[in-house]
Length: 177
Image (tube, rainbow, N blue to C red; front, top):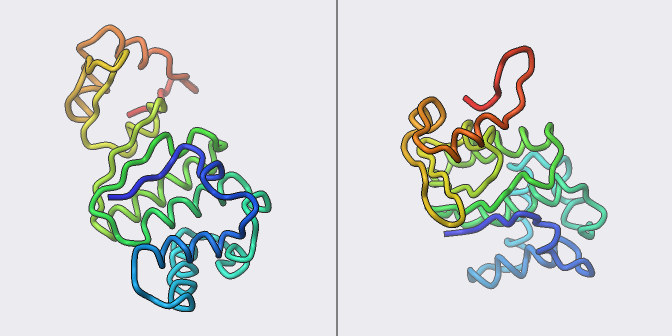
């Protein structure tokens, strides 16, 4: 099991380069050399479509954009091919374009590594796109649950109905199904 945090930038040490943190992470969990860990990390960064994995490894977190830091966090989380990935608001601090890219990459990684994903999000668009099953909670209590289509098309709870009604429309089309 692995986890992607809401703001990966906040989980990275600001005074250490990405490479030193990533190598430490890999070497803590496996018995490989630092050179092998470096190569493994660069490979994962490239799989996350970061433009230059070597350069990212030599960068400090503040030298990367929010989307790049999030991709570093996802790469680290996927390094050991977890069976289950817990993603806590993985797109909340990102612009809409970067959100879409991150979500697509998470879905590709899910398919490539056969990883189950539990995503915690307030973004119904992300939930509708990523999920097979949805659970809607209000004040820590499950108020609606079922397949994506059941919850999105036929919500049984007033809170879920209000959440769905709050999603903006463009040209009469709602972007949650």
